[in-house]
Length: 281
Image (cartoon, rainbow, N blue to C red; front, side, top):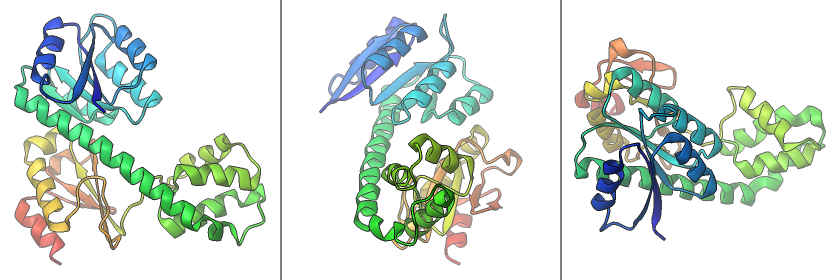
């Protein structure tokens, strides 16, 4: 099935050029010429990816991305702009944009980003299915020590996460039924406490900064070396659950860029050689 892409840009030439760029790809390209129209289109049909301009006459592309990420968190978002700045790049990544591309961009540049974004979406969907299958296989044993009382909600959440390392969506629904509370109550508790998470991580969780400061100082090469050393890519965990890798909008240590964080420890001014030495220990 063709991937559906929505281009939201007030310049018609952008949508036309992207149609031409992807004419030989298995993509279905739709266009909207302002932010409000883009939001209406997004709410009316499902898109795999949206390419959103930063500055439009009605609402900002940042507001469009923020709204869609809240309503449709599985939709991949890419921001494009002819008015690029460090501030807008950081803001876009922080609210959930997959990437930020200054105009003018080449067909190869936009094609590469779109391919990576759709590949990431496919991988995340596959991993979600695998996690849910694992939970269904073992879930009966998780609830055996409990009576099904509301006062046990947090201990049950801790038990499930302790056994499989995260809280899959199906577990949240089962727990709500088991203790007799609305599922919104379970979600409220799980999202309130920082100890709970919804994707599995390794015993050593690596966070790679994709902020502008790290990016311009070589973060992509650092990420490639981490992936090479560990044999995993962004969003994955090693088979022995020793390492997991995540990229974040900003670690908050721009003066130390490029940097990575392993659990709670920051490693500053990284180079590919330093990465190799770190994971050879």
